[in-house]
Image (tube, rainbow, N blue to C red; front, top):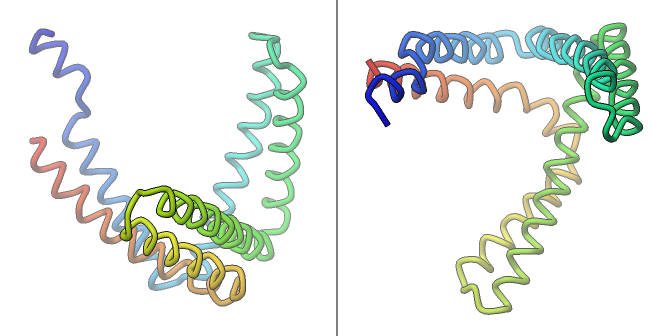
Length: 174
């Protein structure tokens, strides 16, 4: 591959810098005003779902393969988008709750798989990680509301750390 082709495939360093700055700003807002920022982020998610639902239905006319699933996904996206846009306060809570429930169930399933692998010979560390994953999954499901209300702070800290790491990476690209 030529040098010009490699440069075309790489992201410009300034684009990575902008992404890092945006993450940093989002992290600051999530930590400073978690409630308001969560509502705004979920509103953007609702708008995205609405627009994506419309495009999913339009895509049926471009490629009619699996048209039933595309129509179903499009309708669900539009309805979810409308519901989130019309009810911003409870939507932030419901989306947060749903995320915590999915994370809890995922933790239990992944932990169970790790425990199964450990008993099949994957090793003690795999078994320990499986137990920890199951315990965390159960803790999430038993305390959905507590974890939902702490979610903006956790995401804020992750966004700050990700923003700093992305900014550093952008200067390395430069």
